[in-house]
Length: 123
Image (tube, rainbow, N blue to C red; front, side, top):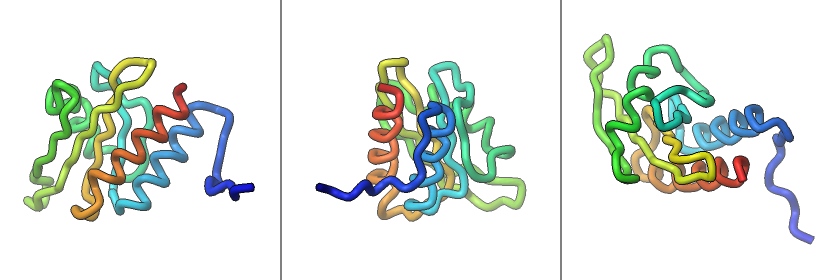
């Protein structure tokens, strides 16, 4: 019998989504990972949230047509933060994973896996 790989689990949807985002952020070394809905409102988030909510609110406009979007936005120190937005098709409509930072070589793969986890939780 295969061993269960998920250690932290929850039957509560919000808690399960938060655990999923935390695991995804940890794997890809995101400083922030925010799940937003079609209006740009935050569903759940992990990491350094406060300064990134504006970017998350723009996720639906930055990633239209279910395409990944990636760019750099300067923070208050003038440093360009890498931002990646990945749309996720769910039974609840399109949701967006908005990632700040990360290891560039595995950002897309991490967001795809994170998106599959979100879809599984919401199914």
